[in-house]
Length: 142
Image (cartoon, rainbow, N blue to C red; front, side):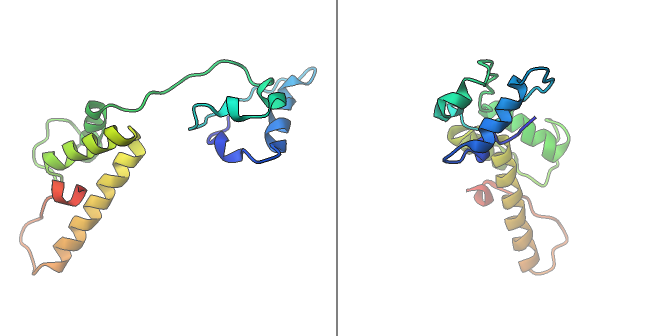
């Protein structure tokens, strides 16, 4: 299994040719499963490489706003209904909305949430000593 196959594409494509040529040899028991972020990668490959790749594609659609919201809520709070959280509900909603409209990539959503948490942490430690925690709000997500 090869993840990020599109990162292996070079001008000559020799590595990819050799990789996809191995399963074509007589008595070969090698199966190559490749994962790429580029939807049209097979069309960008040289014909001699593309001819060795099967036509089976499994396309994963980008996450929707609702799916991102659910995943973030569970990752941050442990469930969807928890109200006492370090993240304000509006911050989670805004993150889900922004990322779903841009890419739908859950990794990007988690990066945005992490950065918002870092900003809030820095703000908390720059204030005079607090008796209570402050929440991550939509202002840190923007």
